[in-house]
Image 1 (cartoon, rainbow, N blue to C red):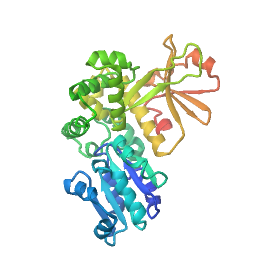
Image 2 (image 1 turned 60 degrees about the horizontal axis):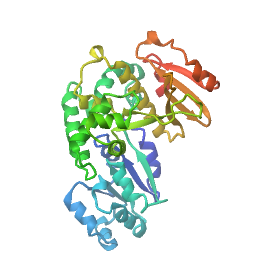
Image 3 (image 1 turned 180 degrees about the vertical axis):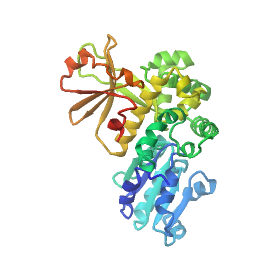
Length: 374
């Protein structure tokens, strides 16, 4: 059993009067986490929002009926809650009318679940984001040296729990994940009018990790206007497929002020999207994979730690750049990522050092990754 970083935080809220929302892509382990925490309890009612009869039950729900259904249970767990119409109002009904029962809801689409719940449960909920497994979780599960040795494997197949637990069968699992989650769930959303263009967009983004992304240019490439590209990217972000970094600028004349980079939360999904699961030794994109890997793992760490850290990249019009910046309480830290340790002596750009003389600078390679991720 792999201990998940969220377990302690969620456990600390059990018995409180706050609803607990856990949002993350399908198959990242939300239900497994709850089963590990609550599996031995006999006062939990489990419901799955994917099931039509559960959707109908909530559609016709009254406080009297839900009391009868809950019986002596003290916890109501609703998986894939975003599938239930007006779920926010339904969960609010339970929270208000049956305060002795605590609600835990999970969802695989943050924009659907959050929009349906936020207004209804303002001040009465705690939200958590859950990702595929992390470097730190796997270090705690096995040991540091073992996981460092596995980094090239993770850069190809990613960290989805079923992938990690299917040694030798990673390709089959990734095929099922990408087909069922990406193409069945996300592309079936009513807000996606051109699913074929979304697939082309996703592949284009996968080929541009670590590079600046222009919505106009990528729109011309896939046949969408820039506004639609922006909306589709927002859907992909809120579905926990990609995330963006924006450029850092404090009004120095040469800095790019409105640029962005996009990365994938899981490199297994990224590589499945472009149909390239060849090994690290045969890749021409190993530098981009390493950059994506390190930044995604750092972003998971920040999220689980409830940190106020702000993440950026930095670049000037003269193409001086730094892969990743982090600002915490006014302190700025700069990082470059090099897969080859022989390139670890790269120097901080003089233009950055001049503009931000008090910022720290470090090059991250597989040989010192623990400084960045643990």
